[in-house]
Amino acid sequence: MFQSDISKKYIGRINSLDIKEFILIIILGLFLTDIVTFLDIHGLREILTFLYLTIVPGTLIIQIFRLNKLKFLNKFVLSIGLSLSTVMFMGFVVNSFYPLILKPLSLFPLVISFNIVILILSLIAYNRNKKDFEMTDLFNFKIDTKGKLVSPMIISILFPFMAIFGTIL
Image 1: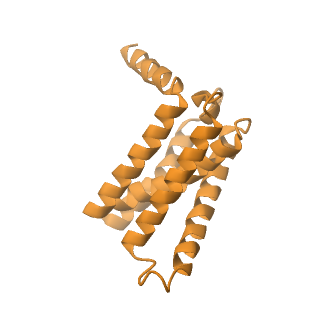
Image 2 (image 1 turned 120 degrees about the vertical axis):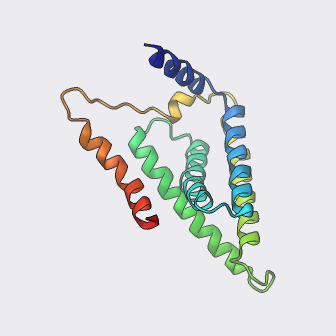
């Protein structure tokens, strides 16, 4: 009972975030990713950068276009697709400035360009959703486990972690 009270308290706090707090979390995550990238913390650099760049740009684009009516799974897959498209397009744009930048696909030009794009997307998302942002529209996640086995779901979630640990060990 104590555990469920704590989780309800935190879930309620997350659901009550407004757009300013949401954008602040995105920007703090960006700076944390930059710090981990520049300090070259092994393992954390790869995982945090991968998670941030595969989720955040697409989530911001979804917020810009106000696609809140989509189901969670559709929104999640669309977010990943938009994020990967944004990352590939930004790599193309940075590489197109080859005569101006000597090493366009090195660490500093890529980090600076991704930071600029994320900050611009955050600014646009903030301006578009000042008045009608609800966190429950972003994470409208519902699982119906009634009459279903939960263990196959848990095992399938563990596959990426087992792959990572398998390559390390």
